Image (cartoon, rainbow, N blue to C red; front, side):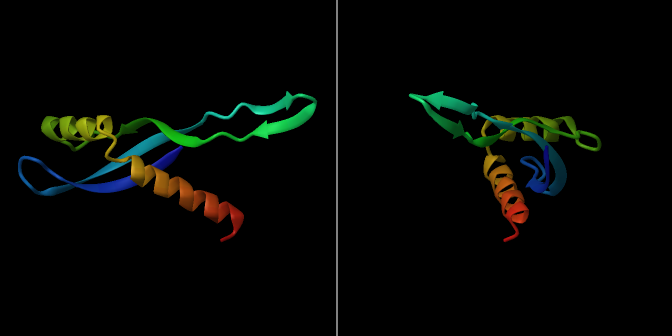
Length: 93
């Protein structure tokens, strides 16, 4: 699970509000397999699935805006950057 905090400009009032987004990390790898007698491992690709957010303190319009932004994939790069940072931290870079 990855959490990010993001300041978003309200489409109506043009004031910024904070939203905390949570995304589940999923992997499409198949793991170990054998191919013509050779043992292989398919690591796959990590990606964020099922993005949610805490709507406490948000107006219905702001909730609708965040849902539209999630549907449009506007937070994907933020989650990808966060996953990359986590991988580099684990490797010791």
